[in-house]
Length: 318
Length: 278
Image (cartoon, rainbow over all chains, first blue to last red; front, side, top):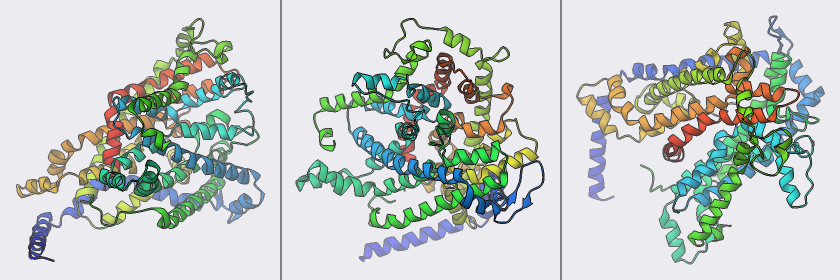
């Protein structure tokens, strides 16, 4: 360490001291005042409900009478004789397994395509982002339901190519696939996050790679992918969590059918709680979902050590 | 694919145009279909042979009692409070997390981030029971109230990141001049974070508009219906009147679309620059 650095460090320390003095000690009160809206909401609408839902999961409760304690009965029933549970869990896993990677791959490709300096890029971005803007709404679910009918628009397009379509939504073999497709069509927010990540990759990396004679594909695998891996990880974790809770399109387009082929876990839980008013049973289902999601997230974090690349000597950190 | 992207600008434009059209195709078809008869709905042509404007006029008249004007009014009223609550409280909370040194700040901030990963299903049942006990069913309170509690973890996180990017020297200069943390927040930080507050407002609006789950849980009487709930009634009919349904569905995305085009810059740029820094 040279002398200059030592001096710098000293002035830094001095500065920090004065900063500390400036802060004073009454930040405690002010701090809690400022975060109080969140804190109150957190206690009222998150902590208390979590505790209550845990308790309810061991009871039978129909809203009309007080909850009665039934011990492990709900869990026992769920795991031993509820075929809807196994079906919905299977459907949800298949949905997550296909829709998450598909969406990640698709949105990464689009982000790369949009990360170029081309005239009018804003216009393209708008056009491509637009479906995601409206994608989660009832309106689009209605649109989708019509387009994938037996007599729907999609089959007419297929007919041009000599392919005879099926009733995509009414056929139990294709209904889940249709929902996965709809989910992929709404790749916008994932794509925007990728785009942000791409913009943060320093251009020098690509330039020096070009000097060394690297081709586009090599650059992609050796620069883009590793540099993007933290963003990929973020999208993966949130994508999995979100997909496990998929509700609206299954609720509107297929209502879980045909023959339960799209009976998503969230839909099953909704039916138990708000159709049959089995609040205790639904709470147990919610806790099982929580454990599954938490497990997936933990596994994700553990595996991430092997593939997510963090810049250690970050020139970009402030 | 990667290789082809590096080709000449002409190919690039061609690729982008084709892809944009592919993405927008269902939307374009939708516009045409909203003017078709049910019989014509499946015909391959985009535009109907004879546009049925009745789909719009008759669709607008939801029932003898109510028009879609009522539902749009309801939804916009709810949106007004949601956006107000979200913008106001997320800024306050974010300032606390970003700038004030209080005990357990780190712990609470970690908890805040963790709540983003909590499946809503775990809390929804007890929340429903709570609102039921407080006799708040069939009111907008359960829909609006959460927005006044910091507007959601994601927005708080977004704003914290943004406030952290503002040089601290500004705060400290004001502090030396004797300003309290409250006036620093109000006079210095709040004006500077206006752009991200716009982002918060936009996304609050869009997400509340589509937050179908909460609406279906808490609102039962038709007079209080939101646009989404009214559309759902159309979908649930035994014989779906597709023309009217698609016409009204199309109208229902108009507010979001207008907002999107007005504030386009805030979308891609706003999220991109503030959302993932540091």
